[in-house]
Image (cartoon, rainbow, N blue to C red):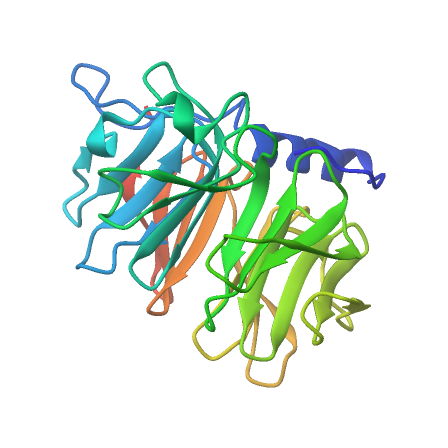
Length: 279
């Protein structure tokens, strides 16, 4: 991701790796396809227990038994931004070798799938914009930060039109019923007016990956190598030590899923379980 703010050296390194996935360890059996790397995002498949895994070479699925399949529909575009809203998939990034020209080049803008990734349609900003940060709120509002701008953009009509909001350099976003949160240089910021203004969240650590639990409490990967979580009172607690830089983070029905040097990992109160190991 391109950022306009200046960070401490450790933070710059973490954000750069998180944004590009350049040091990502590939997943999957090296002796069999598919093999995926440069993971940009993880999301729930609304149809069941599988996970969507957005990568440098398409959207894949991860089954509960650790089986990786894909890329879905044979689409090998670079899904730099990815989110699921209801039953619709939204993505942004760059075309792959077999990406239809109608989806846009060199940037995909916003593309949408209504059949769980088997086919995609151009929605907005195709060819011009590359969202490296993209998330959906519980009300269906889409929030994104383009790689070429230090500005939050929002869409209230399923991605068809976008409105510029506050200037914002953010490594990640999380939207809840109470507001939209941003992982920024100075810590976690919150907006309660649709992204027009942001204020700091008191005593928040500096995070580069951010998610919200179903109750609205926040969870994030810190530049200090710690997975942080808010308790019921809003205080931040150390939940887990991370191994390397977190490339993706998701909360799915209270399941905490992340990607770090171990591979795709589920974090519970009993510890960490590797769902798909790095190779």
